Length: 100
Image 1 (spheres, rainbow, N blue to C red):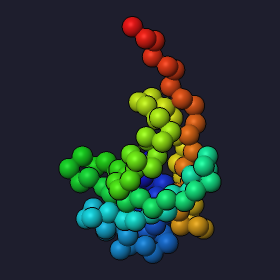
Image 2 (image 1 turned 90 degrees about the horizontal axis):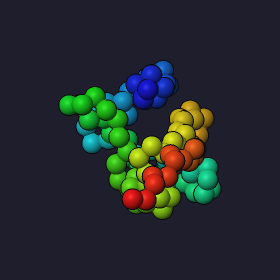
Image 3 (image 1 turned 30 degrees about the vertical axis):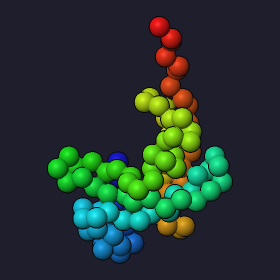
Image 4 (image 1 turned 180 degrees about the vertical axis):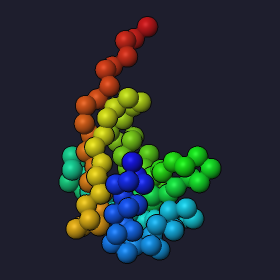
């Protein structure tokens, strides 16, 4: 999805250096948190060996931990070409696991 919805948009916008840096150290990207009304900076990086894109930097401390996100929780994330940033929101949460 990143390849189709972000990388291709960046290429059309002439951001070839950023596309190349994805496979190197990563690219600093702004992320607007729609739930909290705050902006953060993370690093978007492609792991070449697995062909997966990940957020690095403070992803866990700024997004996962403060919200108590768990496996199965759904998030919304889209790239806005006008603001050159991602917009992030927590969507439906996974059902709570029963206590044993």
